[in-house]
Length: 445
Image 1 (cartoon, rainbow, N blue to C red):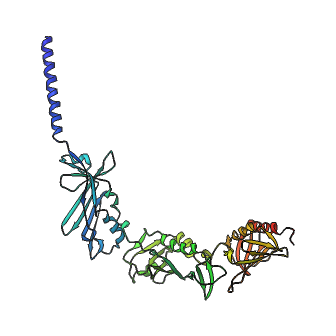
Image 2 (cartoon, rainbow, N blue to C red):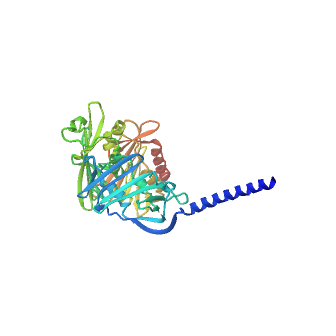
């Protein structure tokens, strides 16, 4: 009886071994052949393409090209951003594989039984279809097949460039890049003219390039703030559009037939000057809109952005914060008045003297440079003068410039430049200046 059981057990083991051998043999017959290469598998000339489409995450986008312009295959009015399309297609000019996997029978192991993204490039030579699967587990390279039974590993994740929302490919109307910002003209509920005049002697210093032209009278402006205004206009959210098919007949619905505010920005790039008008309108419900030039795109503008960033723009948002922007090389002397006593500091080279006594002027210079306005206003000075000083310059056009600082409240002082109120400066800054002058004039009265 024991011999019979042993015999049956041996037969069972032999049968199981045969099964294992059969399975292993079968698997060996289907092992894919992997080769390391650096091979170009796609070389698509963007100019030769007549169409491109892709499907990803359930969304399909299709575009056609004619005369060098791409458009939505089903909506010719949609304003396709040509630069974005060119950037997308540039990734297909030379696609290289680092591994080739041949003799593939099970595409599922590469995620290619149900591709995560399928991209079709069409030219006169036909279609090139790229099916993109999973990432390799070791090096995070993307599996791709061209429908030829071969799987490739590519380093550049082409699926990542394929957007699923068509709006991401919409042209955005912004002021283009420039070499020089030549000017800004605002008309409507806010009106001002900014001009770029870097080489003209329009004020006491050469520190300013932009000026407010107020009927022929020029006031210096802060370069960063002027250029920042253009940046702000360009940064307005253009992802929320009301329409991309606006025409003259429909503008009234957005208040753009008679804009509430228009900024005309003039720039120069590579010696070519151009101007663009950004018009802002408001409908009957108080909603704000933006349109550039004669574009068919009308963008919605959030109320806070319009109020704070657009309508608020003007002289006070563009003027310099510093009370003075001296070129110290042109300074000849400064008269300081404190408590009705006048002290004259004379400059010779890098040396300052008061009553022929050499003084250390660094703290005074720093205090003058650090005097800034925190709130612009045009109030009249009606309290005691804290300190005043007149700077004498080596300039025929602007031989001197004067600053007066008056008491205002516990936190601020009122500052005037050449008798015109600039606004409020922190009282601590006035104290710093007064103490610095006192330190070098002590015992010199």
